[in-house]
Image 1 (cartoon, rainbow, N blue to C red):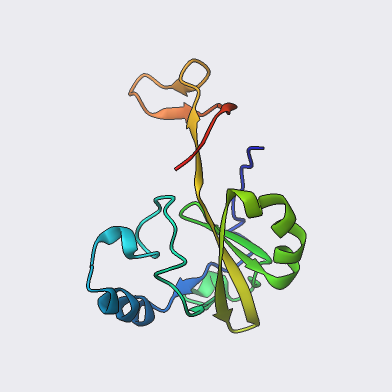
Image 2 (image 1 turned 45 degrees about the horizontal axis):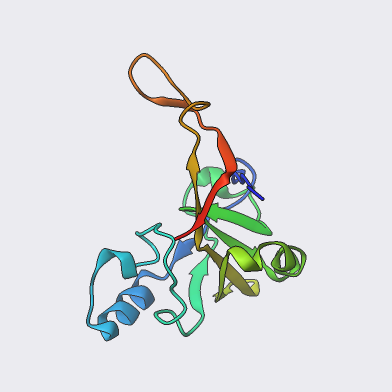
Length: 148
């Protein structure tokens, strides 16, 4: 099944990784390939062997317009999902075969970061570009689904 999720950034806070924690983890690997940085790379590669301790991040208020926003149950970032425990319990049975769950800690407790390991190619016959070549509509077909 194909899912399209978009975060509501008008009503909900976005999260921020603990950059120092990620730098320390990748430094311990001895391989500073950008693909190992969960905060930069969005490739569908397994990260469970790299991030063996819970990732730490927060849904902090960084701007004045954030003061009325709340922490979401689900948040989409770079093709990955933050899930609080309630969202994890609801979605785990549906998406577990499509990726992996990394444990996280944030100001409201524990949660998970879903890292998808399957990709879907756009259907070039049904997707549209404008006169400048910019994508204005992407269409996907489940037939194009493949593991990375």
